[in-house]
Image (cartoon, rainbow, N blue to C red):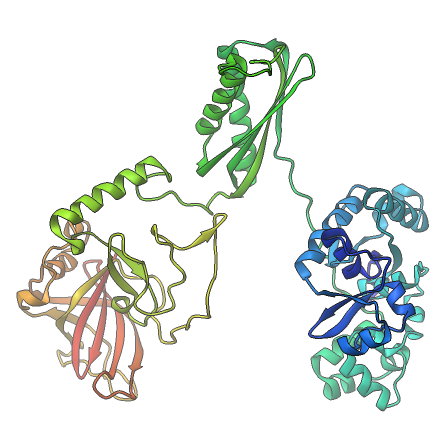
Amino acid sequence: MGEPVRTLLLWCPDWPVLAAEIVDGVPATGPVAVLHANRVIACSERARAEGVRRGLRRREAQGRCSGLTVVDHDPGRDARAFEPVVAAVEEVAVGVEVIRPGACALAARGPSRYLGGEEAAAERIVEHVALSCAVESQIGVAAGVFAAGLAAREGRIVPPGGTSEFLAGQPVEALGRPALADLLRRLGVRTLGDFAALPAGDVLARFGFDGALAHRLAAGRDDRPLAVRRPPADLTVTADLDEPIDRIDVAAFAARTLAEQLHERLAGHGLACTRLGIEAVTAHGQELHRVWRHDGLLTAAAIADRVRWQLDGWLSGARRGGDRPARPTAGIIRLRLLPDGVLAQAGLQPGLWGETGAERERAHRALSRVQGLLGPEAVVTAVLGGGRSPADQTRLVPWGDERRPARPGGGPVASGGGPARAGGRRVNTGPAVPSWPGRLPPPSPAVVLPVPLAASVLDATGAPVVVSARLAVSAPPARLSIGPVSPQATSPDPTPGAAASTSAASATVLRGGPVSSVEIVGWAGPWPVDERWWAPAEARRRARFQVRLADGSALLLAVESGQWLVEAIYD
């Protein structure tokens, strides 16, 4: 196996300290220490001169440096401050992978070829980062990310084929595994070269998988490819107009064409727009800018409408009083649309009554009026929660009440209906929810009966099918029949149209009528459930089956205390 890919790694020394200066204004030229879990994880050069070192406790660090400024560790602050540095590197070379805040890497082959060698590429990147971000950095080049990171701390370019020799002289602490390094030193292994000389099988047997990975790194066999980040796509659309536009009808035509181009570009990346920036430049160089926000997804027509409205407002100049000119001093010669807020096209689903806004408010008022006439329980919505059976996972909540599941496990919900979201994505708040072992596998049934219906399951000989305490099925189920049931055990008002869209057996079940013997052509199960065995009054032990009948319908059956029940119907 050959050497890993030559990697160029940029490292910014004491990055948590620099990030605190960039974001919070803490001067990095003074004695500064960044603490996490009451221990120093980074410190400034002046603090090191006073004796502060990584790993010291707060009190000991302050004892060595009386004027020490202590800053709490904030990974988010470090990442935000490092983004301009990564962007500056991407202006010189593409294919950058962020190792951690303060270090990023890229394949050395590309920039070295068009910048005249690895040394010239390193100098160019360091200079560009310093000019763009006012940040000092060092670059190391070696085979693999691990070796390049060690070389960057020395500002060294390891020649091709010399990575193993370079690593051999490094101390075992360079692995970044304090417990392993301490153990290796007690065993007499002090350098990476000594560690790499050990047999790989013995290392795996003695130190486990993490030790085996460290052994590969010490030997220079860092085969992990770079997970480069892809630069964001340029979604902006621009139209340079041949003649200045000062009429609303001509501007509306240009807006429609540009809106369709933007929508097609977003759709090509699987994105949709929720916030739109509109920019216009006049013949006299005047720049106009406005941002439009929408609670739902902006379609091509919605984008065109907003651009037309904005251009109408700019060109008509309808306003009251003021010293500023009422309209641009010249016609518009350039129009640009910027999707300021984008998300995955499937990330924001319209509501039942269309987009968020007037339609939803009108539906809310109408449903509230129905509740006022017929009572709160007259209008209910379903809330998905936890549970092992379909009946346990759904709770009907009166419209307007807090949408809380009966059992945890269905995910957070918003008061307006549907899962809680942030920026079109599901959010996970609160403590961890149970996974409900024994939960039925998907797909979920379409109709859950409020009261299970008694049934009879027979085998090919006509004998009842029995499930033993060890979940052994006496014989394959062959036929199903549902006897007459009382009106109390049926749904008082089946879903309109449900019987028309299901098979004959399913329609009969929905109406609560008897079903004569129907052949079972397929079945799966049993799935056992043994719930609340510690509370005898609430304990339930049953086994569930999914069966497919000869007429094409599919049912969810359960057997409890020797009695077969029909619990739900599948589409």
